[in-house]
Image 1: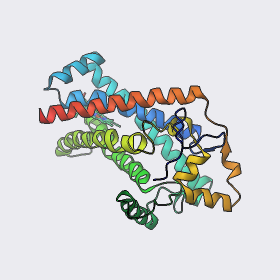
Image 2 (image 1 turned 90 degrees about the horizontal axis):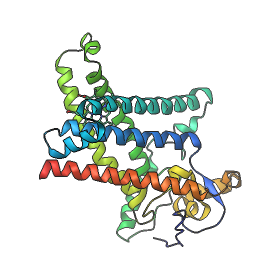
Image 3 (image 1 turned 45 degrees about the horizontal axis):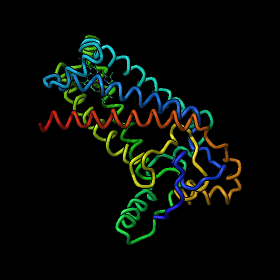
Length: 285
Ligand code: HEM
């Protein structure tokens, strides 16, 4: 791994005033809402799933009791479904109104491509010190994995959740056994989602050596030029070759923005890891 000076303020590799815009305001706002609603859903749903444990009663009391936790669960669900709809709307707008086909294939696309398999293999070689670090472009294979895990997970957990929420309506069109399946799927998918987001996603975003203790990019939207060139050399070269790199440069994030991002991020990581600890305690203790 190339060790470059680590900036404690921004968490970035190297200092410098030149920053690249990675996430615009829309992305950043949706991600913050996604985080808050997911944490809220996990925090209100898990006490229902583990209602036979002591800690579930403590957590439910924190919300105002199991009934209030159920109401809050539905409120957070509305926020999550809104976030998902806004995201889908933007994707479809780019595709059908702006006719932006780069969303379907190529370096700026979330669609998995042969290059991702190659980079995964290269990365594993690099982990064991037998090859160079892959020259990543705009999205890495694990970022795509995280994205699709949430995308499909959202369909499964959201669909089953709506069934549990509006049983009278869905009973008119669906057989009864579907409700048993929905209950099972909702709980199991919740455990999978919580386990994945609060361990692997957190590790990728904040805890791996390049990023530790936290990568504030999803809050600030910006990465320093040095970090950008280190992390995504192929994207840098592609943009420089096309003469588009300078146009992508932006101002550094304000210290207040970095601090706010760190506070939100640290709170989310702490609550998430605590919930994982409580699940493990409920399952194994
Ligand atoms: C996005 C849409 C979602 C909807 C519409 C939804 C809806 C619901 C509903 C109506 C219930 C039954 C609550 C009650 O009995 O008072 C429930 C239970 C639950 N939800 Fe959700 N939910 C959603 C997302 C999530 C997410 C993202 C998680 C976890 C991260 C989650 C975790 C749980 C758990 C663990 C239960 C308890 C299941 C059981 O008792 O077996 N839910 N959900």
